[in-house]
Image 1 (cartoon, helix red, strand yellow):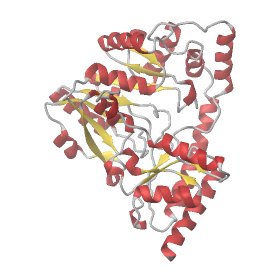
Image 2 (cartoon, helix red, strand yellow):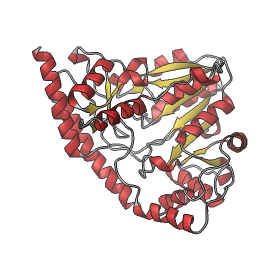
Image 3 (tube, one colour):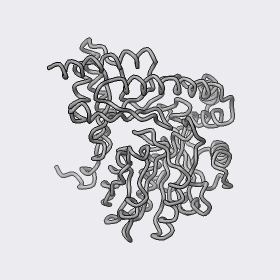
Image 4 (tube, helix red, strand yellow):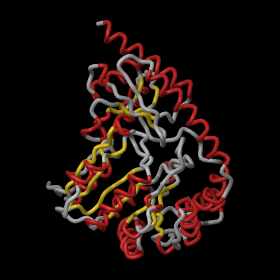
Length: 390
């Protein structure tokens, strides 16, 4: 039997592969500390759960419009206007079952085979995978540790050419926790105008920032007209399994995405969309509590990693990941990640799971308790001490 060339160009995602291996080890009786998955360990706030249950009991179990329920789109559009200081209506907002379908469909609607898509590297694997699937050329944009895991403008300029159709930005960023500045975004916009390419801005971690306010590409005058702003409920509201993402796009692109939805998945879960309405308009107390705890965990894991010989770790400015430099250990990223899982029972990801510029780094998610983080740090220290002793 034959399969398409396109489907064979799709790649998996390291976090889920390591999760599967870790779960198998747990089934065999080994204790694993999970620092590999990008998922808040908190429960979805009760008021959001109650809203969805109420909608379910009221019979909201049928099809919704392909772009989302009108009230959910209105609320999400108002939220994007409020948090990005923009002025758009619900006709420019579309809801899909998660951020990934929005990334996928936006690229499918814009990028042709042979086009080039500049993607952050190290970066979320889906950007490169979907570019390959379409038949485009993913072009890695190095995120530099010496610049707090932001890109270097001169290096970016060298990557852009007439074939560039899209540039993907993810700020705050997975896997590094880096956050772009307004000056960075201004440079991107100016290049986008000069070379006439789209900006896909994955802003799913927009509410998880620590030391400086979040800045969207939409803050740059004119940028909204050539940008796709993506956000959702997964990270801020601990709703990863609900699969609720939304995006602000130009009106014509919205029409194309509606049609894609009709042909692909018909619509987003109807009663789950009550979670968008309640989450974005209801009390934010639980979100604020999560942020306080993430901030505490961030300090613990950064301090702990920097106290281990051979490891140095920057303080992330957003999201809930650290991306420590492990070159001082003399062990490559995948080998060390495997060693920590097998010998220490600590699940993490090799930096190379996020691209070639991830060599020399590991990614740890601190979406776990301080107790487990401290236990993991001690185990990592012991494993590396054993390696050095031998």
